[in-house]
Length: 336
Image (cartoon, rainbow, N blue to C red; front, side, top):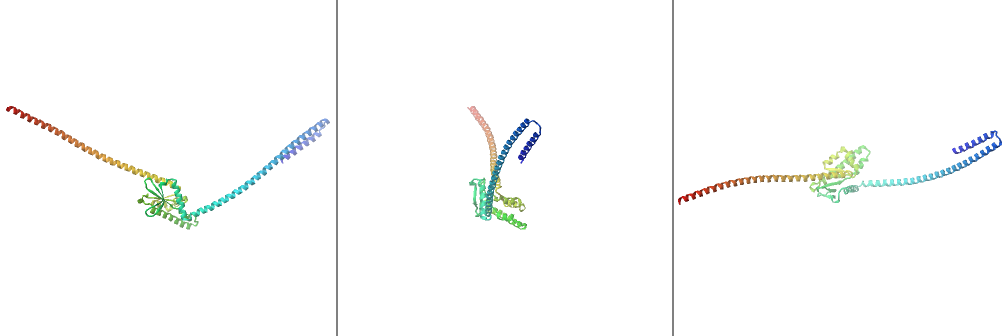
């Protein structure tokens, strides 16, 4: 619109100029020249206006085409976005169904146990060579622990997986506070029963095990609640009393590393004590040998003293014998 206003303003200016020029009283030649100049200016203005108008129309047409192009692109993007949203919705729906199916797995005790054992096996395989991992290690009482680890001192560390997700889910999902308290007690009692079972079945030093065992909980949320949110239950103290260490996927490696270092240090300490014991034995034997040498030296001194004394007595006896012989020889000469 501004462009049209400019055109109108220019035309009005030309018209006013023409009126003013016509009112001037000049001779005919000047008027003709002025009129000719005016015509030339109007012609130039018309050309300029035509060029500007043509340029404006082309620009407007280009902008219109560009706008239509953008609108088409925008519509296409919206259509694609709608298709992507439908795919996302289907993916979320499928994931929800799979998650529901995955959660259904934990409702079956057998599948829940297999999941815990598989999780534990994976972590142990990442930590130890195959020859140090014992799966389903049996004891003389007929019980079999899920896994056992051979430690540096040839002792066996029992590790059993427990996944009480059924009673835990019932506890955390309950909204009624009174019922929630009851289900919490059921959950804690279940955990203590698992601790008791591991302590009584798998801690068997007479069969080469350590005097403690590990309880592996394959769910970090359950482990966290046991160790921190349920402190009033004193499960940590209870498990220590039963010599059972509770671990999780994030704490298993650290726990095993501490156990490894502890037994390795203990083995080195025992070997050091054995070396010191042997050195003490050697020292005692050396002291006894020194005493024997001392006594032998005294005996040698006594023998030497006796030898010297005997030598002196022998010399004295020999001198006396010589004197007797000499006296005998003298008397014999006088008789002759």
